[in-house]
Image (cartoon, rainbow, N blue to C red; front, top):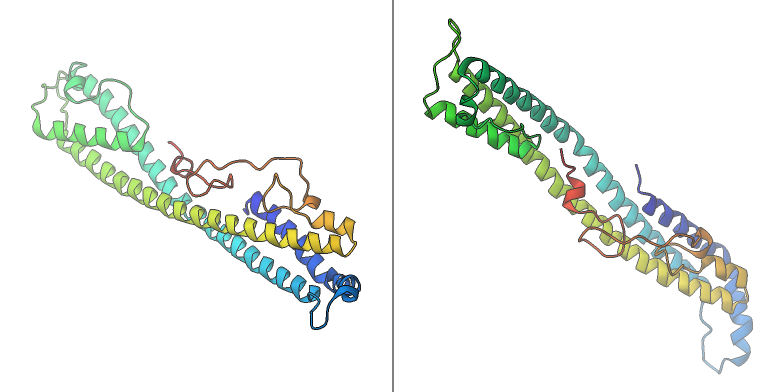
Length: 270
C-alpha cells in the first residue's frame, strides 16, 4: 500500500497547487494595485498570475515523480513475497531433514556418530547456515567411514541421505540467491524513492514559500499561513499540521526521510 509519508506529501501538494490555481488572479490584481503607483516608466509589474501557474506546474511534476517512485518501490516489494516464501519453505524442509537424520543416526549408529556427522548442537534456523550444514553433513557421508548399524537387520542408507540433502540444499541456495537479488533491487527502488522525496521536498519548500510570501504581500495573511511550509515536517504545509517532527532515515540513501531503509530491513531474518 502507498507510504503514509508519500500520501501526506501528496495531500499537502494538492492543497498548495489548488491555492496557486485559485488565487493567482487575485494576487495579480493586488500586485498591480500595490506596485503600479510606484513603478517607473518601462518597469514591468511582476506577473503574479503566471508565477502562480508555473509554481503549480512545478509542484505537479515533482508530485508525479514522487508517486511514481513510491509505486515502483511498492511493486518491487510485492515481487519479493514469492521468493521469500519459497526460501522459507525450503528452509523448513531442510531443517526437518536434518532433525530426522539426527534421530535416525542416533538410533542406528549411536549418539557418538553425531560428532562425526557434524550434528551436535541445535539445528540452525538461518537458511544460509542450514544449507552450509547440509553440505558439510553430505560431505561426511560421502567421504567418511561410518559406524556399523547397531540395530540388527536395519541399514543406514548414506547414499539416500546424500541425495536428499544435496537436492534440498541446492534448491535452497538458489532461493537464497533469488531473495538476495530481490533485496538489491528493492534497495535500488528505495534509493530512487528517497531521491524523489528529497527533490519533492525542495520543490515544495521553494514553491510554498514563494506562494505564501506573494499571498502575504497581497494582503491575504490567512491564505499565506495555510500555504506556508512547516519547518519540522519537510514536504508539508502549515495546514497539514506541525504536531509531529519528521523522523530521520535509518538507511544510507538520504538523510531526510524515514522511508530510507537498510538492507537488514529489506531482508528480515528468518
